[in-house]
Length: 394
Ligand SMILES: [Zn+2]
Image (cartoon, helix red, strand yellow):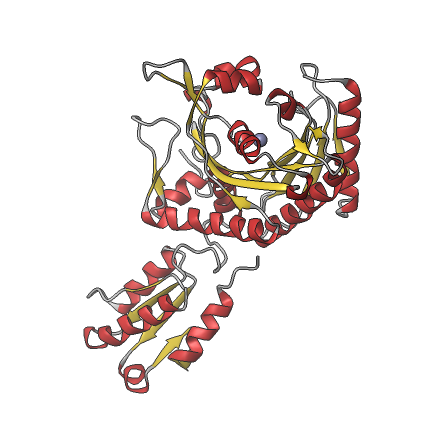
């Protein structure tokens, strides 16, 4: 029995998505759920643009040679889903890093091209045992808001500090006020020299400080096999902490893939590779978000932001025109002109977590106006008011 505040219950109530046994740990997004998903993607994309990333897409399936070079075959083999296509062994990607490394290599950049910031909404697969799957929180297929910054070592602290500031901005925009930052240092099983680990850990700590994150929790031994990381956690309305974003500092993968840029003195050097994800998994973040807001998301995120309700059928034409005007203004709006009573349709709009309900009757048709939560307004005023209320804070 699911508790009413469980995101799986909320997702069912709001008709967002479903699961089927033929696709364990993978989501069938319904139209309303996918609208929400896209709102999350748009929020992340807006920050990517502001922070100077180029968005890319890399292949879903890669030959094993790539996973051997990246170290995933050695460290993560059981987590990868193999694909048999009759050719050499291949796997569905569990991460996008090696793909982005290929893009860097192909670009053959000079120091003037750095930092190179690449981002991908990467659909990844992980071979999780069925027993651990848990709604959106633990999936076998999910989307990472993945990004990699290839930079010269002297650019790294500034780049990392920018990531720290942006991830905090993102969480605040979604209504999470309390944010926690951890520094995960070298694990027992790791690649690379100790001096490199010392440097990478020191740079991450400095970046957090530059970004004004005063309290950084030390998490000894919890770094990835290829580098230390900052981990960003948030507290939900029920007092639970969720670790979501990561920022990793990696000297190792550029060496393994023989990545080089030409510096100002015409010397070929290895860049530093920063791995960053703010949501982590978009699906998991949505699960957390739905529980945090108990399904009633802020207007800028709502799958349906406004519903127009004609009092009677004779008002439906104007109601449709109102909805179309709101859609033209970029709002997610529709008209519910079914023959059910107005009271029932208002109740359904509440049930569907639609934040704005616009009622139109004879008076509104005549005045080309709408009734919005107690006020009679000309349509233009209502449009402006809703557009302001639904504007993205990012
Ligand atoms: Zn990566």
